[in-house]
Length: 353
Image: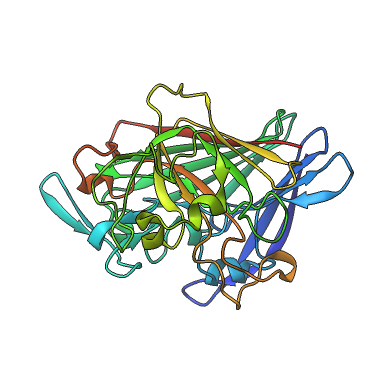
């Protein structure tokens, strides 16, 4: 079942008011509900009905569209054109240097000044046993400095296996770099800290960063480090360690590279809530995931839904993607999209409770 409601209105650049809509998808079992928003094609909420009958909110969100528009953090939004950081906000493609908007110090982050998270996307809903909403948008040539006109589609499907599947598509009319992801913030406990969430990732390498969180170019094995989540560890067990890379980032904010022998449709990891009542499994065909432990949360102006204050480590993100700053590092993942090619990718967050 799909329900569409008006969320509110936000101001456009020309001063006019734009209507923002919510789309609520309910599973046939009634045990899982997902709310989507056309502002940023974002995940605005994920609610589970536990066996006890209690409702638990599994994803952080805001109460108003204005908060989504003005707050930092990219809560629940589709990120593009390029998720994560690009060093010095520039790259060279076919012999020409392109300069991007520098919105993270001297660097480019998550699409620039007005990335995909600030767009009002066109929505098309499809009801049925697995209800879905497809959001589409156009990024004009040279938007935020990127070459080529880009047509993007993001389809959210609430699956019969109590999963939220995201399918990405993109076409370009000129060579460009692309790294789409979603920045949903999870808290499987429903509130409070995520420090004691137990995380397992099938990742045997990670990318160290410099003090500005730009990859150094090294792809380092996780063996013997706090970045080894293959057997699982708590968020705090890594994010609050004395590892130099952790101290540099203020916690976990690193790209983890999945094992090469992992099948494209295999489970890439899971997270277990501290009380053991909710487990979230991760499936994706992307080569990497950016694991973020909520290091920069804490803006008092924008409390979470229901008025809960933002605090450091009150949510975590698993942003499936290719490598950050890949176009500036030989040996990193290929993120070039050319005319005539179709970018296709999927990620699914599957919930067991």
